[in-house]
Length: 242
Ligand code: ADP
Ligand code: MG
Image (cartoon, rainbow, N blue to C red; front, side):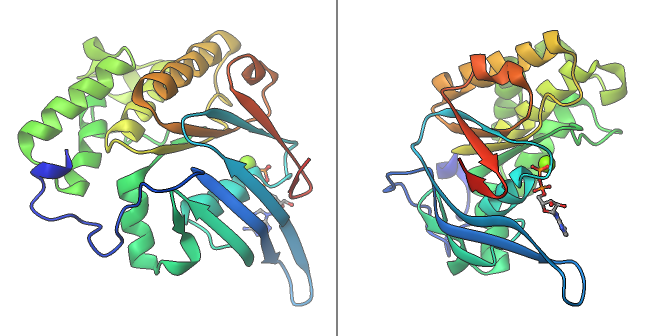
């Protein structure tokens, strides 16, 4: 895809391929100030090393820091202290503009509530990501169909979110996350609003995507179903991996 672009949007960020770990944190802290003298430490010196090409679950009770960790790894939030190195990038070294570009180029996101634009068709929801990135018309068309095919929705491309089941909407969201050929997908409770049969379909889809598209998926979940599908489980408790 990259060769067809006029200029690399991340030319000032320099995409790296020379990393051992897809995700690596050292003594990562995220402390929220919730009052004048009140702080909540959501991440407490968290250490993590994740090799590329794996499907991993991040488990832990509600409030254990899963969403906070994903936000610090995607650069949506900034850690208070410590190092977060993602796809070879020390995120603290990037300014906000660089972080936004880096995220758009290299990451995909999947959320619990799908997050699709309601007035756009499945096709348009996926294609929009490629428009934002400045891909050309033919490339956008081919990649959008490829991604919707991959998630099994080729026949549903003209449907809008409200015409689809929850599982189908989440498939569109996964196709959208894949559109920009990310190296890492971060998923926050992606099966949280799905019945268990549909959740299983989504989990096995993730499993095959990791194998076939050679990417890493880190998925926050407290669903016990996930254990059967992932390569490994990271257990989070009180802001630390246990
Ligand atoms: P999880 O996703 O595992 O449920 P979170 O990362 O959402 O956990 O929350 C971890 C802790 O941080 C909780 O105690 C939560 O109340 C607190 N927290 C999360 N976001 C904020 C915020 N924006 N401001 C203050 N406290 C927060
Ligand atoms: Mg959460």
